Image 1 (tube, rainbow, N blue to C red):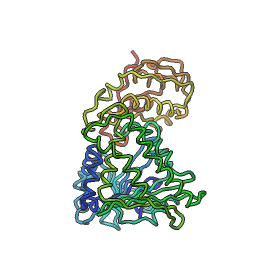
Image 2 (image 1 turned 45 degrees about the vertical axis):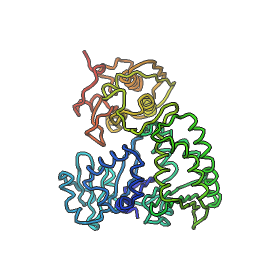
Image 3 (image 1 turned 60 degrees about the horizontal axis):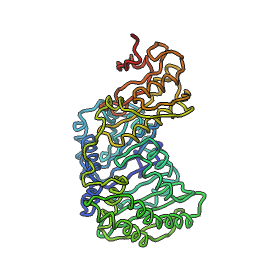
Length: 458
């Protein structure tokens, strides 16, 4: 079940880590995801205080607020004895109270240890943990996703539950950058792949003597047979699309053989897929040789990393070139032009411009509007920003121009009446990271943020 998942989730990743690592093919699948995934997993294990072999089930949900993503985790342990050591492993976080129950707030994450289930803990932001307590661990689920969960197989090694919007409109929206580059690199193909009239989908895999994969679709306004047939037809178009894309690549010898064979792998997978219906949902599933799993995932990962005209070698984690700090990034040049937008969308587009120019950075970059700071000064995200036409300006200059135009005082940035400012400060969700915050002059002073020189009076 999705018990203890925070409210509002419409994107669920369900993994059985211990079972996955007990399978030879499961281990190969994890290796096929590359060094980025391995590093992310190690970092997560450090934060959680447990390792994957100790976890029987891991549920990750994704939440969006103010266009920013936050992850939450429901962890079910194989051995309840491990749970007795968790507070110490989390460096003895501070105990807090909400809804008459205790939770624990650490420097990076908050944690919940449900009293009625000693094998489970929740690791999330404080907002999500409080949401779990508000609903006593039983937040009302999305109806379409719940239908698919009820018919899912809990023995699968991996299952994704999602609404189309949670994937393409939130997780992969414009402005987001992942290890493979801009989110739209995968969002656009998914938009083309999803059947029309789709309310929710699930995708699951099991890695054993054979590789089993299954997709289920639910749509209130679309016939289930039509949903399945539509998706099956769209899969058939993928090999030709990959071949056209491959013609623009120069695969490194490290993965050239897989690149050449990949369209054929997809055709073979398509030929093994069977269409059916089950209850209210459409079902497509197939059984392939066990080694197909890691080959398909490895090939897909390398194609995502590849850039037309660039040879991708076997070390995609090479040190990124370009600005190495937030301060250096603020000095880089860019272009930005629009007639009129809200402050929120102007900041979003500026962030996208930066990420398009610097898709791989050695730090997590984002620009966040601190909504509560603005509200306290009577400023809204809908402040209009007009007539922006920046050419070869630094990121710092662009930020200043946007906040000055948004407030429209007619006075220089250094004037005390210019309430809206930007600073480099701690990420509200991960305070150890420095990001760009759009806040107010008063809030910056209260929080001891250093104002950029342009906002300081002589």
